[in-house]
Length: 126
Image (cartoon, rainbow, N blue to C red; front, side):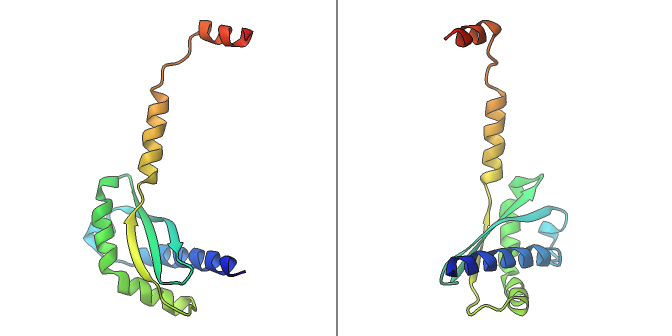
């Protein structure tokens, strides 16, 4: 039952941070599309890892993380006013590199040599 509550809180925190991100006025992220890709909340509510991705410009992820770290107090106040939690977690913003990894794997698979018709005929006979 407790795991269900943590999962629900994780989704609520993710939603509140995503909505509040549109209110952050900083030139480092104002022209970019910054999204929260994943949130991990510890069972004791001490830490909350927030993974972000910058769509179209992954190299600007570190600058966006620095901006969001400076606005952590704003996010904590926003979460505290909307979600009732027994403890306010420390927010840790990280760049989500999984999208880059998936893109790299996709390009590698696209660059694999295509099987010739002879190779496919041989494999059908076996």
